[in-house]
Length: 216
Image (tube, rainbow, N blue to C red):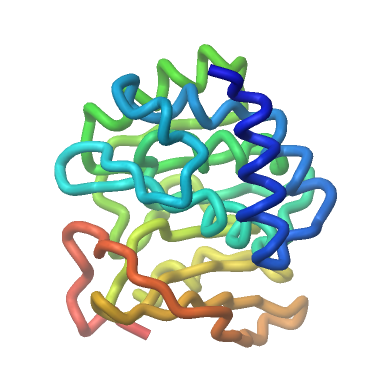
C-alpha cells in the first residue's frame, strides 16, 4: 500500500479541514508512521476517519482528534508530559516527537508491552511506560508541563491539577457517553487556573474512575 500518499490525503482532507494548521504538528503527523501503530489486520484503515479497535473494548482516536488535541496542547521542546491511557502508543509517539519526556500510563499490561515494541521500532527513546491505574491522578513522576487524558471522566480529579506546573496545559474529556466535552486547563505563572471548553465528542471512559470526593 502507498502509505505516504494515504497519509498526505489524511492530512489534507481530515486534519487541515478541522483547523489544524500548526506547521510543527503537521510535520510530526508526516514523520510518525501511524500505520505501524494499528493492529496488523486493520492496517489498511490506518488513515481513515475511523476509531480503530484495539481490543478490550478500547479504540484509537480518529486522526483529526489526535491532531486537534496535539495542537491544543501547544507542546514545547522542554515539556515534561503525562499521558493517561497509552493505547496503541501512537499518540504517545506524537507527544514524544514534540516534547522532552513523556510518561505514559495504562492499566493494561498487554497494551504497554505492544506500545513498547512499536515505539522501539520507530526509534522513540524519550518515553517512560508505566503499568498502573492513573484515572485518579499520577504523582510518581510529576509535576508536569502537559497532561493529557485520552479517555473520558465524569469530572476531573483534583490530583491532576495539583501536578500541573505553572504555565502548564491539561486536556481532559469530561462527561459521559454519548456527550462529552473536551476541556483545556491552563495554569498561569502565578498559579491561577483557567479553563476553556474546546469541542464536543464521544470518547470511552477511563477505567476505574476516581471517587467523587476527589473530583474538581
